[in-house]
Every structure is written in C-alpha cells, then in structure tokens.
Amino acid sequence: MAPRFAIVVGEFYTELAERLVTSARRVFEDAGADGVDVFAVPGAFELPLAAQMAAQTGRYAGIACLGAVIRGETSHYDHVCNEAARGIQDVALRTGVPCGFGLLTVENSDQAMARSGGGKRDQGAHAADAVLALLRVRAELDVAAPPAG
Image (tube, rainbow, N blue to C red):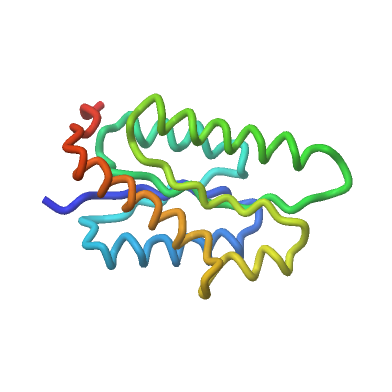
C-alpha cells in the first residue's frame, strides 16, 4: 500500500503558506502518495503540536512542517524560530515519524518569496524530500515504522 502523508502549515502568511503546500504536495504525489492531508494552524509556534497530533494517529508515513517567520523589530522572531525548530525535531525523535522542516526563517518578504515555490530553494519541496529521504533510510536499515496510534 502506498504511504499517506500529512502537511502541517502555519497560515500567518497566507500566500507563502499556499506556495509551500503546493510544492510539498507535488513532491509527495510524485512519489506515489496514497493521499496528502493538510492541517492548518495559525503560525509557526503551533507547528510542533500539530505535527505531534498527526504523528500520534499512526496514519502518516511522514509529515512536512511548513510556514514562515519573517524577522521583525523584536526578539519574538528568535523565540518562535527556535521553539518551532526544537519542537518539530522533538516530535520526529519521540514518535519516529519523519518530520520535514519547511519553516522559512528569513529577514524579509523578498527572501520568503524566493524560498517558497519553484527553483532550487523551494522549502516546501525540500521538506517533503527530507521526509522521503528518511523513509528510504528506514527501509535501507530495515527499521520498523512506529506503531499506529
């Protein structure tokens, strides 16, 4: 049976979120996914919990975590980026479900647009590619997938 994938996406920057989801979905579908479910959350800080909930269902071979944080005038950027990254990594390590990190952490909107769709810096596609790469490593090492639920 073909694998099913989840995408969790922070929608704070709607246009960027849509672009990231489109490219991640394309990678999963091109790899023969049985389906791709998308779960939207308000922003990057909520990505780890959404990824954990998806992983705990046992329905998904992997999860692409997508969104954007653009630097502002305060330290809020640093806190959100660091905690989102740490949380997403924690989910993957605790559950054994590969979680691709497709969170743009950029200085401005131009950088975000350049990394959110098409071209070699497409973070949505890279996050999905990372999930697929980890699944290949699991298969090569003959490590069992985490139990469902």
